Amino acid sequence: MRIVKDHFAATSGAQEVEYQVLLPADPREGERLPLVLHLHGAMSSSRSLELARPHYEELFREGEFPRAVIACPSTPTEGGFYLDWPDGGGAWETLISAEFPGHLAKTYGPFTGTALIGASMGGFGGLNVAFGDPERFAAVAAISPAVFPGETPQDVPEKNLPSVLGELHRAMGHGTGDAAAYTRNSVYGRARANAERIRRAALPILVDCGAADEFLLHEGAAYLHDVLKELAIPHEFRLVEGAGHVGPAAETRTKEAIRFIGAALRRRA
Image 1 (cartoon, rainbow, N blue to C red):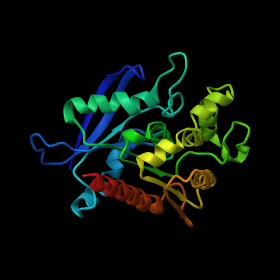
Image 2 (image 1 turned 90 degrees about the vertical axis):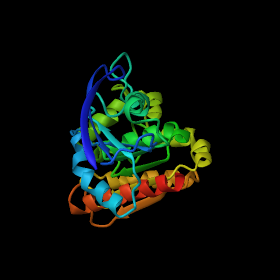
Image 3 (image 1 turned 90 degrees about the horizontal axis):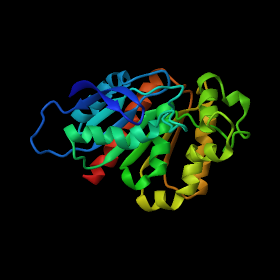
């Protein structure tokens, strides 16, 4: 597989967005491929795709991942978070869900389908985008997603809001604790609002988290698991004993999440 590095002038984010694309090494004229949006975590960049490249390549060689266009844009953490901000503050969810795929389609499309995979902040973004428009996506896999054990600004314990997670928590409520905005920007709020659509779309969903996550994200992942069960939304939930937010187990779990996406795309082929 080969990596292409590029950038484009995004109107949604109102700035130049750098991105990387992982492609089959042997392009075939007229071939239509699925698109995989690989969303990086906080304080990261499109280099996340370079780090994951060996997993994609290994699974492709083993026949467990199809020929695909895999793309990762660099997006900001604070002031980004894969959210659309009010008052012209940037529309990063719109960029991920619409503008960036549209830009890629001009060169690599049209696509046969689109899947989402992300870790931490990227897991939050992937779930939010997929639950907001479930019919559009072939699958979503979230590794250690940045979700909280509560559904309103007041419900989330302070211990679950260290550092950048506290910034995300405030950003979901537009920095003012706006409960309606918080719900609109919440994975739970979208799951509840669109439960019937998600079920009808038969969206393949993976939620994976280490049971020893240093940022207590396993508590949010377990809460999400319970909400999805309550809503009768089929999904796969993996809570990996002894695993933290990073480390060797996280690498293995990333590979398994890519395998999950690959299986979903192969079923659609």
